[in-house]
Image 1 (cartoon, helix red, strand yellow):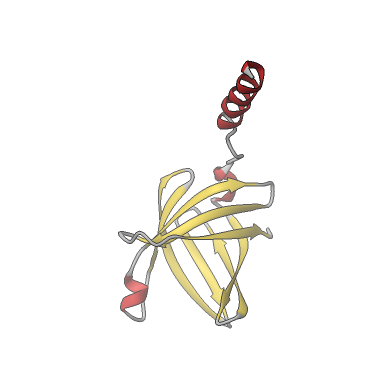
Image 2 (cartoon, helix red, strand yellow):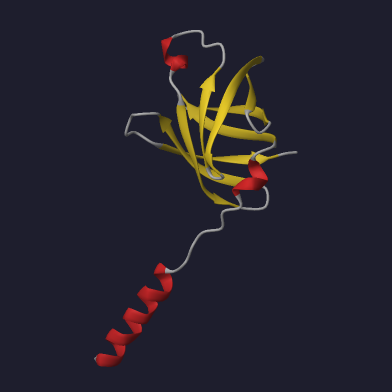
Length: 124
């Protein structure tokens, strides 16, 4: 009984030390795609990111946003020329994990508690 308790404790301690890979600096520049489901239809956005500017391409239209990096893995996105009140709201993005060609992130409107999760794939 003591041995099984000890094994479980060692497993829990070893598992709690695991940190997912996060090389966020590799994603400050580049061309990315992000897909999401809207009204049961998958929509894809392509965006080009420079350190402080991001240009989104969605359904034949482009939009430019400014980026303010909080740290290497978190930043705030704000549309430069919002067309309505909803677009005036800033979005907080936090990169959770990375691979060599993609990152998983959590995002939500600044000041609100609802968060969503997505994955962006680096294509260039």
